[in-house]
Image: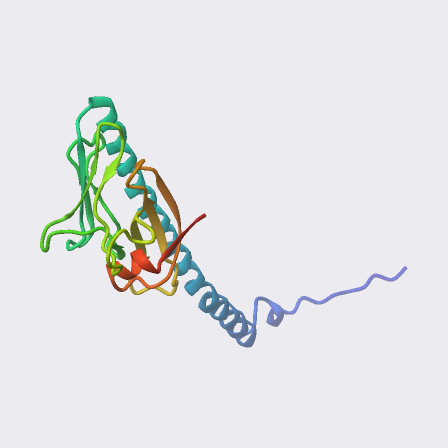
Length: 193
């Protein structure tokens, strides 16, 4: 039987310049498709983390007010970058939200001062919401904190609704106008997620 004699050809080793160029172009196209999606995912994580942090400090303040039988104040400093949240009875300390996370609320405040939410000894939340309805009360008397990410490809807005009678918090997705506090109260909807 005759053997097949294959000659080694040194010219057939590796990839040609055209093949390498095609591979680089394909990798570039895939990267261009994946990067915006990845950036949007990171923004969603920042948004969800901000909601969890604020809800955590609110619930902690409520528990401490009940446990110590004394009112506990939570202060939201929206004018600072990043947004700062402090509680005068917090165990875990103050919180700073991510630099790009924006927080808008319908809870009234004295100009230049932080927004104040007070939890009473029974765990009830005390605050005043802004509304354009005259006379009050507004259609939805719950305090709403609206979270969004500045300069982001995502348009998601998350919300945290606080019941002023029981102090319960509900996280969800926000739909509606968030340009002014009275619009948040009168027209905005925080749907639990």
